Amino acid sequence: MNSAKQVNSIRNRHNRGMKNSVNRKSAELPCWSVASRNAFGDNNLLNEFMKIEEKVKQYIEQFKHATEHLDPADERLKKLDIDFVRKLSRIIETHPGIKDGQSKYIAEKALLIAAVYDISAEQKVDILYAGLLIQLGKISLPEKLLTKPFYSLSMVDKYRFLGHAVDGEVLLHGLTQFKGAVTLIRHQNEHYNGEGFPDGLVEHNIPLGSRILSVVSDYIAYLEGSMTGKVMFADAALSQLIIQKESHYDPEIVDIFMHVLRGETLEELKETIAQAKLLAVATERWRKGLVLNARNKPLRTTTIVEIALSQLRLGMKVDSIYFGSEPYIRNCIVDQSIIDNVTLLTKRYGKNPIIKIFLSMK
Image 1 (cartoon, helix red, strand yellow):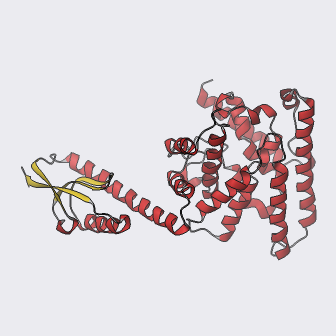
Image 2: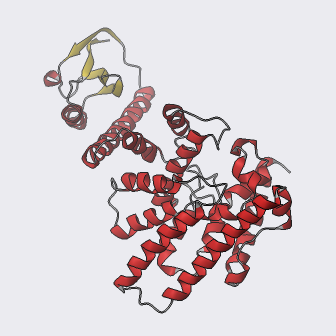
Image 3: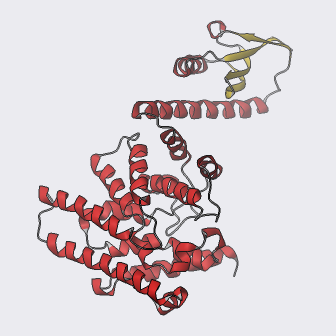
């Protein structure tokens, strides 16, 4: 069986298993299998893991019973919800294989990223809850999957590990007030290019909160070495995210996270997004300009001169326009949209562009 078929086979088997688990009674929620028990070796450690898993399940069930008769609009329920999430998050992090403070960090950074987007308060609460409970499903994993670097796991073990997102979904099944957060938890391991887990969602079909949580949680994993087996400095961990933009991660979210790590304010973050979108439009125009130019005779010249923005005119033949080291456009004929965009970018960047035009044409 080739690797692609193997991945699909593993994904389908896991999804069938999780679907069956959702339909079980709460007393039959995922528990330690014989294989999982054998993987531990240390019975004392296994017992400690099992006690925490049982404690988590009991706490969830107690909360279900305590709130099942409350009206969803009851303000008391909202207070109970946040208290439940905070306490459950603390219980999860008493697990020997889960590091203390990670979920809080993930939730906080995810909210800073989410603040840039025009989303509702309810969606932000979903991201907060999902961040705090993002590691819930890991309580059902054997020790080897929590302590060995991800890269060193077999293909089967990798997908068993990634399945913790669906295990978390199963554990919270029936708590309708957390439906949004549960969806974000389920899709935390999806990849931007559609090759993720469990559903192979692509780009913006992946919920925004899940795309955000994926970036922040993987950054932590690179920092601490659980992804590669090597502890990394912040710059190196961030480089891993940048390298995998467009494949694993939403490129815009990676860019925003970079600025979050620099401590920028919300206003600065929004300005960064506005600039990035403007540059993306400009880059697309540049690419189209190159394509159009390739269909005609190439532009040739004997002289290229640099001019000021105030000298830029309709119909001029541009060699290149740069803002510092950032290219805006090359090899095109100036139209009004180019003049407007360059003027706007000049105001945003606070520096003059480098404009080079063809002085004479043959």
